[in-house]
Image 1: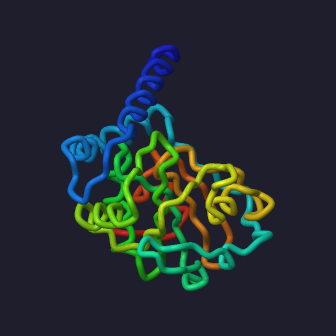
Image 2: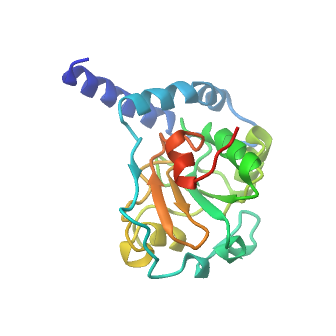
Length: 228
């Protein structure tokens, strides 16, 4: 396929993704729009990966010890309780910024599948955010209900927060996107369902764009696990 055609199709994919992640009111039960987005999720991710849109994998040349420990950073759970990553020492940690009304929302299903199959070795923590096209307008209670009813999510969900760089950025994502804190990575979330992997010792080992499946070979290789 000619380069110009690839660029044109890639631009169309970006436009479709932006439309798919445009805002609507969140509900516990999925709206017609959300059902459509869930059904087209496999095609959307397949197309974006084929054209290299939202599909970057950023890995360090070598693992580096963080300057600041992630284990020292607290966060609030979606139910309003105080927590930290100290409880997850010794496990691999996946941190992902989530959204309920996006073309990538179907990735909740893959994340839950990964968690169910490997929860002895990993923990996943989702951080709902309203940063991209105002796709997460609901309250914490509405988000929790949506995740449980529609995707059976069992892994921890944090309270809604901002994940992009700026004054309102959550401290966890400030750590994830600042080399002066995590040791090497500067990548903040590119869109909803950007993912980070931290190893058992608290070292950041990779950043993954939204189009990278948590069940895909690149992600599982970075986690250093195999699932059926």
